[in-house]
Length: 177
Picture (spheres, helix red, strand yellow):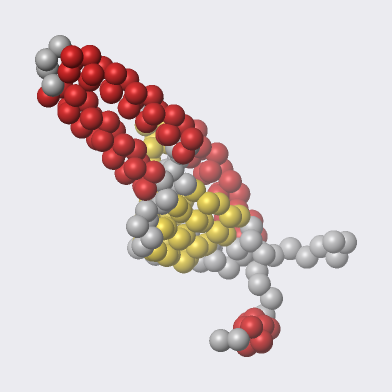
């Protein structure tokens, strides 16, 4: 489709709705790529030097096991970084609540709800705080904000409840702006 056709299609659909709430949730990773390289370099040097000491004492198989350990740690970090590509997008407008979940493999799952019919539910542990958040609407029960910690879930919950309440109030007209 050409650019001109897309513009015409947008005009026919009407103006885009204003977003009341938008959140992009991603898994937290405390180690960036530079930190990963530093850790792997340090681990490799320590393992190599220690392995050489064992090699000089006649325990040559230990050098191979140190190399295997470094390889396993490298693989674990790579899996961790790959899983960090997962994300969850939650958007609220006056007429729609959209949840878009993208796995670390790129698989997309989407749900769309009418914000007037959505109920937000949570499981709370007395010691830990909010463990799980759920969107419930007409038989659908979807767990959201899986990446967040308890305090972050609490803040997210408050923001999403405010957005759903704003969506239920409907659009407002402000002639000044």
